[in-house]
Image 1 (cartoon, rainbow, N blue to C red):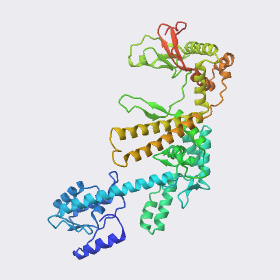
Image 2 (image 1 turned 90 degrees about the vertical axis):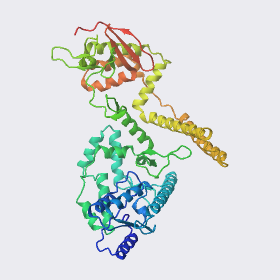
Image 3 (image 1 turned 180 degrees about the vertical axis):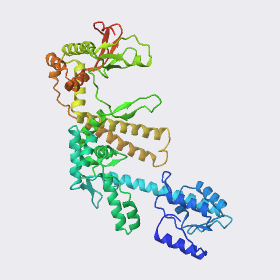
Image 4 (image 1 turned 120 degrees about the horizontal axis):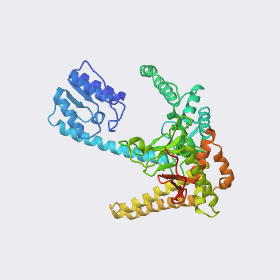
Length: 519
């Protein structure tokens, strides 16, 4: 028997007693028999028990307690009956494998159970969507909040302070791993550990002491991890927004649905957090591996031009150390895997001096109305005011999503014929009006975003920029690379003794340089 309601338990035991059974084994199950991904441990244990011990009867309260996957499971239970000789009985379906037509009745019961499950799933999906639009939080209470009776969230007196501490530390430049270590060192209970404690407490409240004690013996480590910190930082609900599949939910006007009147962090702070997260990830491209996955950016570069310079053969040019008194050199990475390449290695000071001179000359030649200056300003904003760029990108993505919905609606009407019934035209008009209004609201909000004021006068001062590059201390390497990134996209180094810089906002430009030093 599956699914453990007391009434069903009593009914099945009573029928077993009527059939003369004296040794009764009960299999209880709380997971859904409808979901494909559900792991039905009790069901699997029951099947194994029947095959091993060959009981006389297998009793279920109703066929949908046995399975809700439809007719295909009728074949499975039929095979089990034939293999073991067990008598399969479903009380409420009047189903008994002792009858000749039982498989036909089982098929009907299975089909009916699956249909009921589909209808139930549809109703649940519709109800949850309605609750999301109303700002009601029905999922597990997120860390930092308390759920009220009307399904709204309010800040937890102590845990909200922890979330605030995490956000402040991350925005101040701390890494997620450093934040996790600090929280663990301070003895603050981790989210997963708190969930464990709450589950054990609920089991004890319900009188399930044996199950509670069994769980208590499997006590998890009370340790904060990078993942637990990340989940709090990127979760929309931390900023008070309703979330579905880890993404914010928006209302019919294109505004985020809020689940609390007192979010722990602001929407602007969330944008800054996401912008920093984006800047700290890179795309992985490895032969034989899936392309496009996210990864950490790895070790910080040790050379000024790492990531900026490429060889004419297409490979990256990397810095490599040499034993004194020899100078460190930039070398083509392709030469290490036997790729034919004519480029000789270049002393680090020579190539860096050539690129810096080109950068200083480029900045000095920029006029106030030069479009390349605007491109530099946009890049500066992306680095130093990421919340503005993130907000603009957020609105743009929402607008793209709404345009895609409009296109799909048109396809549904003209290609798939989904509005050909009597009420179709009115339904189509209603859907189209709603999406068009949302799109107009998002486009209006995007157009009204203020342009931030950018002061890049220090960058355009050749003397000040030259002074920045003149300080070759390792402590200033990150600052010098940041200046390069604002101006320079990449530099191709050719064997003929020239570099080809590609400036931010422009096409490639060829500049001759002195012949590189001999290898």
